[in-house]
Length: 82
Image (cartoon, rainbow, N blue to C red; front, side, top):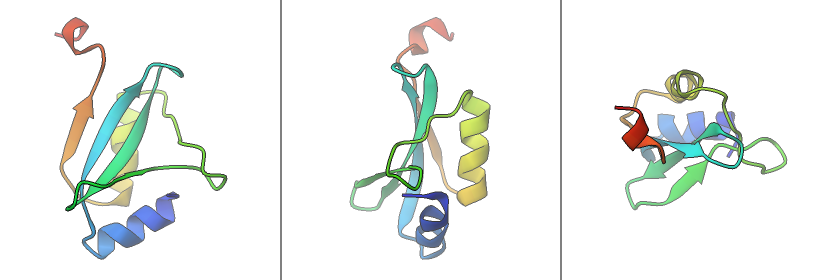
């Protein structure tokens, strides 16, 4: 979903949380929104390719642009970030 679709679904209260995932292929961060039924909706560009953000802060800022919801951070390197 592109950002405008995410904003619309957030306004309709369809999305309940955002999950920021560390993308080990691009060494960046991707964002998946989740609805109340557990379905994932990744943020993509207009071609349907998932977007990758350079930093966790940048990804969090994008989530806040879409709407106000809980954010879960899923990093493969959690053990090294302590």
